[in-house]
Length: 114
Length: 113
Image 1 (cartoon, rainbow over the protein chains, first blue to last red):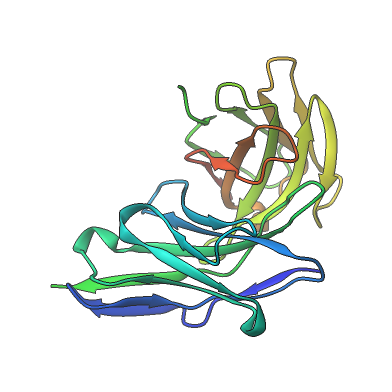
Image 2 (cartoon, helix red, strand yellow):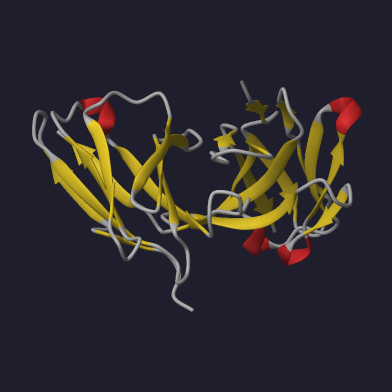
């Protein structure tokens, strides 16, 4: 069974500061990993994905994430936060074969202070 | 290219009633997955449809059922609504079950009173 743990339900940073959102996963098979962002009253938008190619993945809006198999982690980072980054962020895992159903973490709400 | 659309956007029902939610997949996508997102939680997988057949189901009771039509649009039906069914219901489409990326619609917010 797969699972995702997102450490910190709320993260607050100052505008221009580094953003680090943590995600650890468990999976019995090589996983595919995703980060999605959800703005208030909206659906989920894909930020980036890892599908067993390069371990450092670049996504939209300046975000990137690094897959570390030894640590079973897939942390999301952005060098400089912007006010528009304030949203809920979800890490998700799916199996590399089969129905590819996503298992999500509980989410991290990012607050950006001016 | 049209993205994933869902209707209605909001819905209020009373306990015991039945509800139908609708989803139109992104152009060219033949696989639709449904997720339930309770307040303050991550989405949970309900089931997936591929070419009009159910292709896997999460830990949800049989009163959650679905359909996929020849144009790959989909419906989620929930019978005998319970208060805990209040949630945002998200539909996601992808191109075949082997394509890893799912694209989400804006969701339908259901409130059960």
